[in-house]
Length: 324
Image 1 (cartoon, rainbow, N blue to C red):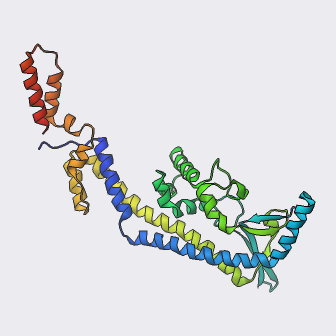
Image 2 (image 1 turned 60 degrees about the vertical axis):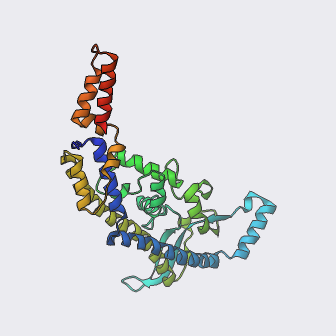
Image 3 (image 1 turned 180 degrees about the vertical axis):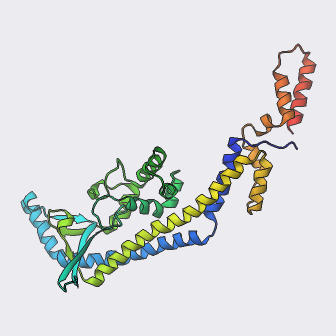
């Protein structure tokens, strides 16, 4: 069989098939990432149960119930109870260099896009956590949840922005709104994720002005949970870095290969079984264009020559036999 020349379509098919194997290999980096995601679920459960206790210490459910009854009776003037998923927790058990008691506080957001640095403002790190946490769901929606990791050393650019926006939209974060917006705006996956973490709080001011008292041990538990979220991001980055390095070399090799057989040989050396016939069969031009005898027959058949009906039938038969 005549060798099939490489073209862009075949290179892309080979690249995607081999890359898919890279992403599903049972490597240490992949296992670390999956373990980090399992761990964050555990920390979320522990931290949220504790947050409920801490919040209800400051805002007892019975007081919340009374205030809601007042709102029902008197309307907006008594509208001081709201649900929130982010809180400032603070403790005063540390001392400064002079021995004076100091307050230690930070912002903790239980939402899908919640920040990882203690700020109440929007955070790229929170978005990185969201796309890494829902990686498989996003890939199923034809999104690229690895875009942040792949572009970690690059500034914002149209390619990165396009894929980030697609991921955020698929998760329910539309129009670039901040993760701290009112929960009534939650949509889709984000809404389902956030729903269990809303708690009743009393007051009309923003969370940054209502620090909720907790103990130092409780504060450390909240901090451990936030560190676990950051670990998902870092382990995802490490894993994708290893895949990127392999893919960079793969692209160089495939670009240099002239024939499909070379790409098949590479895959075999990597322990990846590929069906050459399938690649060719699904390629729109592989057999027709790059097989010299087929191409010659096709070109000859295009010439406007005077032929008898029998000669035309014979030429067509010879052409079809050359394809087999």
